Image (cartoon, rainbow, N blue to C red; front, top):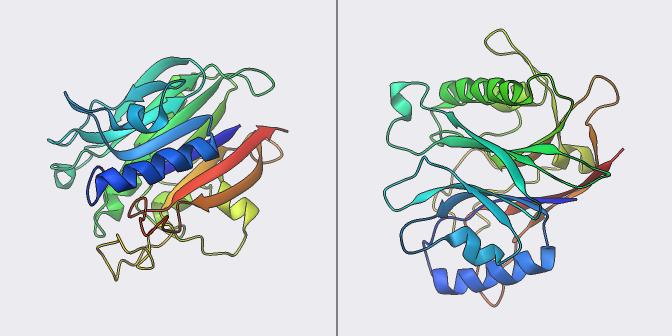
Length: 263
């Protein structure tokens, strides 16, 4: 089962050429599950449907920017219940469509039903406090959705924070926040221990923030069980859309793809 996450940067820049690079690359990657951030949906255009083509079930966020920018979940398999978390946790989060989608996925055996979560918290450098609150809100939403059920959970998205940030350390089981704790396995860390794996970098010509201090901010995480680590085996993880194609960079972020399977 292949999971892909990517911040699409909306339709900024030379969208016509970026679109061609993304469409071709996605077809070659053939992901089963997708989480997109900064994806446009309005009365005239559905960017996710355009890029993925037929054969995917889509869940769109209600939280959107004025131009229709939000997040989306895509799945080759039918979706079940869909929930969206309210990430407006302080007055400072107003003015940006930070949000999280959680969708049940009716994946076939041997994987079986799972919960796919697209997390897109506040982006500003000075808002790690809000990202901590938002990470806790997502963890509680997941617990509410599962309601004690033993299901795989895959959380993927642009977390806008480096691995050493408290919000990410909370998700990966390295610290508690606000009287709760969880543990997810970071697919990149599992496959490439000690490697930086940056996804937002000035090496990308579309990146506008040359001295942005957080480099690896896009993740695929798998929830851990009581014993033996993640409930799905992480077989591979890599960055995608890292190089220009015919001089065209796909987005200001690199994407992340993880191949998961039953233990």
